[in-house]
Amino acid sequence: MDRRTFLKTGAGVAAIGATGGISAPALSQGAAARTLRFVPQANLANFDPIWGTQYVVRNASVMVWDTLYGVNAQLEPQRQMVEGEEVSSDGKTWTFKLRENLFWHDGERVLAKDCVASLERWMVRDGMGQMIRDLKDELVAVDDRSFRLRLKSPFPKMLLALGKNNTPMAFMMPERLAKTDPFQQISEFVGSGPMRFARNEWVPGAKAIFTKFDRYVPRQEAPSWLAGGKQVNFDRIEWTIMPDPATAAAALQNNEVDWYETPLPDLVPQLRRNRNIRVDIADPLGNIGSFRFNHLHAPFNDVRARRAVAMALNQQDYMQAVVGDDPSLWSALPGFFTPGTPLYTEAGGDILKGPRNIDAAKRLLAESGYNGQPITVLVAQDQAPLKAMGEVTNALLSSIGMRVDFVATDWGTVGQRRAMKTPPGQGGWHVFHTWHAGADCTNPSSYLALRTTGDRAWFGWPSDEAVENARAKWFDAPNLDAEKAAVAEMNAAAMNHVTYLPTGFFKTYQAWRSNVSGVVGGPIPFFWGVTKS
Image (cartoon, rainbow, N blue to C red):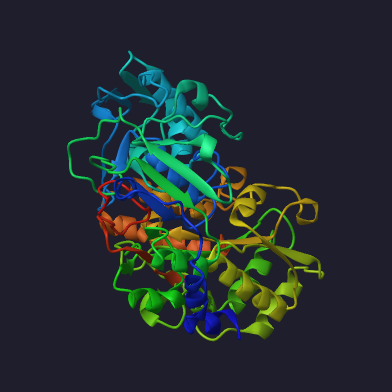
């Protein structure tokens, strides 16, 4: 019996539930109501939200570190740590003033110089930050609560850059931490957000604990995603790492956890039959599956090899492996932008449409000079969507004559290894899988995975002027029609270059106990506004 058949029977859940699942410490009723027990999508293997781009790190970081601005559910940037901003008439000088009553978790006041150092570090690693850095003439603290950013030319999307939800977000840190080399990880975890990180209780691979920061003063506005008042109603949020989906689902049914971020679709019918559990779509903007190439090393430094894979890739195979047979959970995606949003386009996407042509793919692969070397594919086994995509890729690459070095590992290791530029035989890689939240892919501004700036690009380091030129046209576009034209050009250029391959568009579920209220859909599990009875 294969994995999918086993899970569909419910036997995996029933067997675990019968034995009591994972034992949990006894809590009084009052203590239980003040503690939220959460199962995240993956292990929190590192905790530096600027150094890397893993969603699980971002999701934990929004509790610990705050931002100057934050996008709401309409993806509009709103003030967060900032009380107000002034922009010069020529659009080149921005002056920001922090609101009062901002404190770091170590008790020190948040100062403008902390924000200056934090922005400097973030600008090195983030795509929009790099654009601001290229335009920067001066970034200085004016006084304890104000700082000034002067540019060589206007940057109209400043507030979106500072408040966006995609990684790396512009998190504010104490100056001493923000001065850490952006290519090295921080060693302290001091923020100013609503929750502290309990480092002494952190067990990577097992648990991460967050405790309430009593000096945090939420904004008065109603919460909406990363905007508004981040009122956390728990003294303690416990993340328990459960890589096995059946184990996590059983723990939810047994009341050993309160909220499960990514239940496997095969297990959802079982969960829905339990009257004490609620299930809903995690994020209405969904996700885009990603087949990520390393453009630095053969064979995928040759566009013909990348196109050969595109000719053979069947998105239906990937999506059914990820979310099952329910057609409402997935769709084919011959493009890079989120379906159903204003800038969605399929320009240049014909290579992913129609019947797959394995023979033509083999011929093109041979033309690229592929000589039979092993293709190192990094596959995270502790994230069900990535494990499923990796298994499909193993079959796909084998079908066109490639020899696959299938590296079954965990997501934390993938996150570390994908940053290595060394040849695949010396610790590097050829392919890894991830997904991009649909909220990150609605426009080019925050779409890190589509940048083609070579060494400054995201992992895989693609380089292509046509993609970047089209992106620049979007930033300069005076109206929506011009934006659509620029995005269509960018989509076609990225398809031609095969910057990466979308494996399809899919939605996922989240599940929680019925005594938990306030859970909302979005690209991040937002813990503010959630209560438990």
